[in-house]
Length: 431
Image (cartoon, rainbow, N blue to C red; front, side):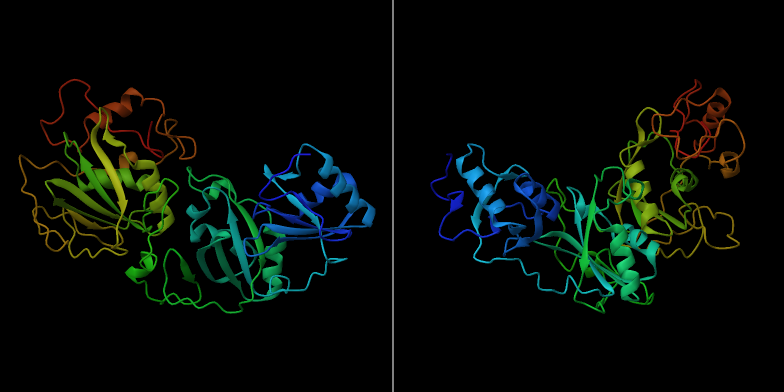
């Protein structure tokens, strides 16, 4: 018989009982795994898992005491110990003759659900994704997310217990649909119980807490930073606080990048509300504002590290800005508010709207105004929908390439007379 000197697999201090006490279980062990462990020896009629301070203990109750004795006897004489998820499980008779499941807050139906997100990338599931999942069953009042020893968790508040029960019954044990998650986030499973809370206290809107009943709740910067506690990713790097405004830095600028160029690139992923360009640390930077955080996330994931022009020119580096609403006081060649119903034509050499930034001097003749209509989606056969196009899409046909090579991105004299680098192809544009 295999044994461990420091912690024997069996303890014989208790008389036989049809209830067995199991120790050293994985903390995420579920009832089905306990039933599967005891099934070869008899009928398991009751279980109680996730017991103890570390949630690594459990009880299983057989229909007959001889079945419990059979399980203890088998593993006492076997060279292979009982295991769950590769961990050795220690067995002993319990001092109780039956399992009494006293009802706790988790068993009493309420309007607030305690959701545990399981998976390697659980902490990367955004509060917006959770809202999309749970709002399918009714109006979600509030959501708060936090980390405990049990993992990444959330409290989701509904109007009433009936709606919460409907969501719990449908979602418990299910995985979040992959199409709601960004590409690098792996499978995430929901484990749901009832919470003892009835009304969550949300003091500010942030990426960790949201009150959908109070749109006027303030958004504090300290909230976006997680109340001073930075979140760490799986690679040990600090996770950024997501925002609907992206900060774009452009390197290796062999060709001119105008405001219209940026609008064409970033509008591929959703409507652009505002753009502000400025010079900083000897390079060009821009703030690009989307209507919502999710659109900005998709754009950042798709564009980070990619180049606007073929040949590695004008490479984009993106991060989330602390701004949520840019203040554009005048439309010019360095800033634009696309939400204005009647936007005046660009004013050349006007002062930029970002305070403290200096207008870059114009060198050479100005480029003609860019016509965005020529890249608008149409019924042309060369148009590829966003869901089918990607970074590795086929090269553009000659007429499209010609249009790129003679487009107003390039000030006169910057494009070599040969074909030269065309603009990189983005989903939603002519290919």
